[in-house]
Every structure is written in structure tokens, then in C-alpha cells.
Length: 354
Image 1 (cartoon, rainbow, N blue to C red):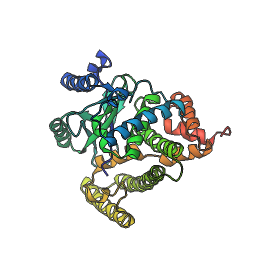
Image 2: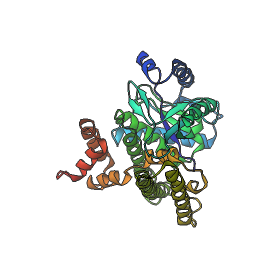
Image 3: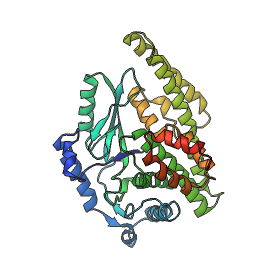
Image 4: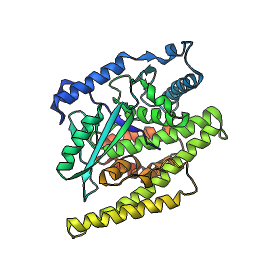
């Protein structure tokens, strides 16, 4: 499965963005592309009145409106006008996301923006531009990775529309993506990319499970698929974190750069073999492609960005009586007051009030 990459689109918000690490040309291109998306917005309710909308599209658009309502009314998220409209995208991939990391350190290369601080990825509307930026970083000695993006969030600054290419996903994945993005509107910690993405990943999955249970019942195919998707996410999260620990242990050794690079290839190879054997009987696993792709530290950073400490959020979910609205409320209250958001969640898990 190609995991949908979430891109925080930071444009048109303020002239201060020109003080970011990006060139003015980058910001102008982003503004132009976002302008096209906003210009093409059409209320979903109005779009559904068209007679030529096929049944699958109708069902998915109605689902998005139901997800919006559930996020707002049940989970008390900051929904605003997001995902109440639909916008046509005239190409299969809207953006391309670049991540980078040193060759012997699992530490993301970051880009700085005035409004949101440092972020561990950069989005480009042209694959050629992303590849050129990657080549520059490679010349400086970094590992790089480029992936297509399926969705983005403007963190509530604009009423984000549903982009047409998201309709290619099944209903469960579509719901996960919308819940994920709406949580970015609800809680976002400046400069804490790992926390922002992994917490939204957790909320997206857990919200989809609860939503399909409440809408179609516990025995529905949608509810069961949502549960399976989350179980696979947790399984791969634990695997990739252990693989990351093995790499970090290697990188901490006082040996030569050449030896580290040689030994890391052995870790990558064993990791892919182990994963392939583990899911051999499950060819439909959502992370089935991991064993087939080339690995480097930038690829690892991508996975760790979305999969870090998922069990931590699961523990909070259990302590809050498996009530996701309470989990969201607790994090919204406590996380902005703490220094390290992950430590703040650990504190919630230790609190006698739970």
C-alpha cells in the first residue's frame, strides 16, 4: 500500500512566510496551486445534486460529510468548513514530499517556517523540483526519499476541500485520511513533527473504527476492515521502531563511517527479510511493500514520523475508558502546556485522575 502522505500546506497565510527557509519562487508556486484548489471548490451538497455523479462517488462524498459531522458532534474536533466542499485536481498526484536524513543518524533534516517552526519534510508541486532538491541534499551527504502526497492540511487557516483524487481510496482509508486531517486542525504543536503526525495517525484510525461501528454496526465489513487496518498499523509500528533501535545502536558505535554504512546494509537486508517472512501468509497487509523497496535513513524517517509511540496513545485510549472524545479533550488541554508532547501524554497515562 502506498501510504497517503499528509502535507501541511503553509501558504497564503502571511507575508511572513517569505521569511521561511523557502525561496519566494517556492512560496509563489505553492500559492498558485492552492489558489487553483480553492477556486475550484464546490459545496459537496451542491455537487451531489448533479445527475451525472456515479454511485461510488456519491457514496464516498456522503461518507465524507458524515465523517465531518461525527468529528464535530461526537469527537468535538475543530472542523470549521473543512471537507464540506469538493475540489477537482487535474493530475494523479498533487504534491511530492521530500524527506532527508544523515547517512549514519536517524535524525530528520528539517525546514523552518515562521508559523509552524521546523518540519521534517518539504512538499513540492513538481516531481522535477523535488528531485532537484533531493539531488542537492544528496550532494551534501544526505539520504533522501520522495513520495507522492494524497492530502494536506492548512491547519484550519482555510476550509480545506476534499480533493478529487482522494476518491480513489476505499471508504475506510478515506475516512482515516479525513479524520487525520481534521485532527491537525484541532491540535498542532509547533516544531513537533513526529508528535503531530503520529497522534493524527492514531486519531485517524481510532476515529474510523468508532465511526463505522456507530454507523454500520460492529459486525459490518467496514468496521472490521478499520480494526484490521489499525492492528496492521500497530504491528508495523512496533517492527519499524525495533529496526530503528538497531540502526541507532549501530550509528552510536565508535567505528568508521565506511564500516557503519556497510553494517547498516546488513540491518536493512535482515529487516526486510524478517518482515517478508512475517506477513508471507497475509499478502493484503497494508505494509506489504516494505520488503520490496530500497531502504535508507530517509525512508526510515518517513515511517517513524507516522508510527512513533502509537502504543502510547493506545494506552491513553484504554485509560480514558476507550472514549476517543475524552482522549482528544485531554490532549488538547494538556499538550500545549508541556514542553515535550510525548512526555505530556506519558504524564496523562500516569495521572491518578485516569
